[in-house]
Image (cartoon, rainbow over all chains, first blue to last red; front, side, top):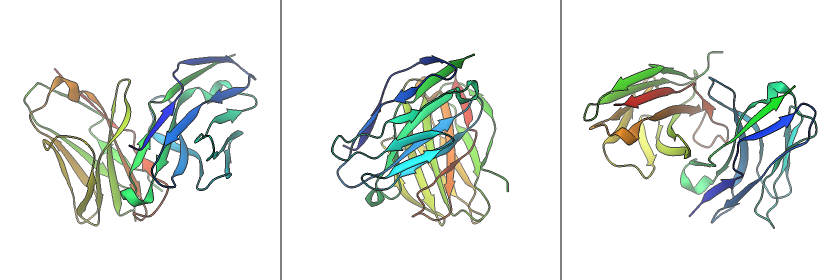
Length: 113
Length: 113
């Protein structure tokens, strides 16, 4: 079935370190891919998205490229800040499932000064 | 613009009781989605309502039900509560059912004792 697998956490990095959070997917159709972020005590917020192969989503210094050949959508940031500490969720959406999203289990990131 | 709101923020029930959770979407949004975020399991899709009708449901038993009111607000009911129903329940809304972006509320944390 359709699903998303993302790397296990928690991840702890020092400020200004490089971040990669891996995400791979399984889908029967042509999904749109998303990264959502959940800051402590808040709901999920859309971080970035890509709707077709080779698209790159970007926001707040984060980037992810839709790789159809490897069925991946890895999240990267060149220099993390303490304020990036949050839980990150990879998700896919297939339009033929009525706008249902499939989420990964989330990866907790803590950035230390 | 007010975001998605949910009430209550916390709810404590005992096994066998019923829980009612409420969600108000962003003004103008017609679609409402419910997700369960259990510890270690990520977000699991529960229900999708659009224009007052249930459009899709996830792999949950029938004791999870809900409805959408004419003002597009929504209610999630969980009957015959079980311990494993303890989770954060998130509501999201979108402008149209085709919209790729879902906006999430802060959630209701349900604890079943």
